[in-house]
Length: 337
Length: 279
Image (cartoon, rainbow over all chains, first blue to last red; front, side, top):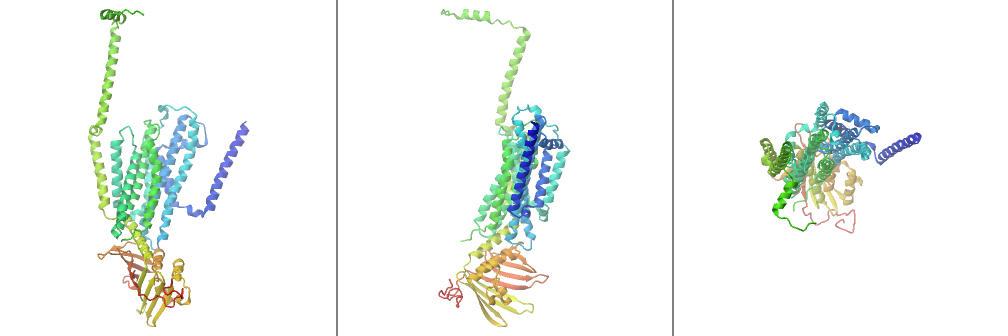
């Protein structure tokens, strides 16, 4: 019996390795592998996502989560904790990928000011690098969701734990959270350093005011009601509202074919990109860590549905907006009659 | 069952015998205390519901101030966005859109007249006059110290040039003396030059005459293009030498979509001898 189980486990492992090899070969055969490599983007997504996990969970919980990937023994409370850690990791990488995409395209456009030999052939690599960040974020998120789903499957057959037993071991803001914030901000500053060649504060000021102010208003006046609009959802809502405002301004600018109209369109497109980036940063640095902390303290049992929609849908929405912005840049305005 | 009805006095006496008020004092006081707590709880929950109806008024002052400040932030942010000047990021995006608009304007052009003046190192000028029509091709007249020469560039050659960046299909076009003019042989050729060879990614400026300037680089030369803001078609294109005293190496002046004289651009009709218009 035990030998049958051991051989079955060996076959399962061999099948998984073979599947991974087939996927890698397919990726290699599909094109030049170097086309899928962007070191800066991958570095930002990997380190930034890991830093976001450290902000939300203490090191001991993260270490236990890694242990439970390979070992199925443990208490239900440990499994619950590990599930939360892996879900947070997947969410963090996904958000970091979306944020990296938006930052990458902004850095690319600002960098075009100093490019000597350029043309439209130089614009397409900007979009490629931007999409690669989302690709890396999605890939790492799926890798993290696999153990999460596996642990959820183990817990499904067991009775639910009382709330008192779902509390984590450390509830305060430890050194891990501080280190996570420092690490994330360091990676963020290192990534956006090309933007420091321009005066960066006027660039960020209007969208920061709109997104941050709107999120505060939503949290103050709606968060106290039974609907429990979470901080992450508030940032996502304001990011969406600000982006829609940018699209409306862009359409107004398109009615004016003169260079003034082009300026209006350009300002609107810049506003859309910056609003998405600020909303993503708000979710990653404020909304998600506070909600994870509330769960560890026992105030909540699970992330709010509003939060989950914000975490997983808004980065995808940002990617769609980014592609629309790129398309609107390379498509000329209609001619004047 | 007794169908006989009882009067009230008998009913009262019956109830009095069954439910005697003989609770011990401590039990009675405990029951009273519990009853009072229950009533206080009902009253308190009713007060909380009333408070939620007027939640913003019941907020502490600091939360009200924070909410007002946040609302003011939103309004100021909107106003700054709608009335502010373009930022560096918006300026970069605007330049890309302007170049896209110029490229699209060139591709829509139906006729072009261009005068190209080239000055060599000795200061001797060479003048090229280019006439292009979408239906035929281009005629290039060159005036130099060696006299006047004419080159015909059929439409098929121009189409091939768009793909292969000005390949010469016959010996005449291969002569280097025609190269400065072939760069402007058609609007589509010029558009390809702008997209691929000219580094037009730097900032431009707007003049009071409704023209704006795009600058860039092509190898050791600086490029300056003055564009009409109404039609997004180039008016003047200059290639300047670098250095403290830049001089114009090549200057091209354009007229767009003007009617060209009725006679065929190419009297030899390289494409179709039966069709004077060269279709």
